[in-house]
Image 1 (cartoon, rainbow, N blue to C red):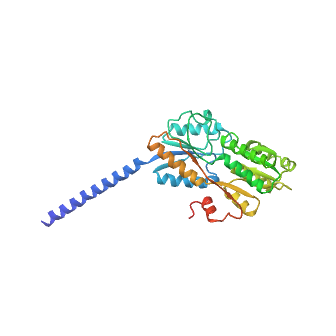
Image 2 (tube, helix red, strand yellow):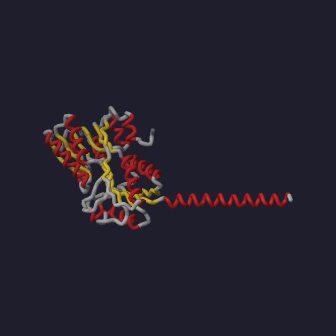
Length: 316
């Protein structure tokens, strides 16, 4: 009798364990199937300037049950280097993509209509097809940069205009030039990122092209402005520009940089992932235009609580 009871208890325990295991497997299988996949393509993906954006992506992916694939890329020299990567991800297993277009020429970067939900960050593209975009107000950005130089008392400036293949950079430049013109500030020269790379080999160019300040429209060019000051004898100018890298924060703190405009790229990463997930799951053609705020950062407010949150969003 005792053996029979023991056998029944053991059999019951085995059956119970099988049921629990099966239920656990079904629950987890359901959770896994609920996940979707999103590929993200940006220029020079390992650069520290994407750190806050990457953190926003990761949090957005966690909150929205997304498998995040941040595609490994080098520094694009032209749009032809980005194009096959975008095509590969659109043709592959990803359910949707987030792209920072190197160029605003849609025929080169994206087909007129993509079969998968596509979210654009940083800049829009020139097309009749509407895409969801997550980016700063580029006109406002250019105007604010101009105001900073005017308020700083600058009389003659040079401009590092970034990648002028992007419509966002063109909008920044146009607004900046208009604001400077209205204030009577002379623009001595305007140099795009490609031209800047060449001119940095001849440091005498900048010695002879004397200006009070350099205004930079994007992070990498702001870093180059710092490099020129550090590595060129008898060269001094005030620097205003976009930037969020550790290098730029260091030289802002040292006084080499007067002022930076810092987009909230954590928010850009989080919102781009959230809207991509929404568009995938609900098969929606909704095209949101989500504005990303930017903040004026100086040596004086660099360590303020609000500024620290923008620069280091995961540090609470």
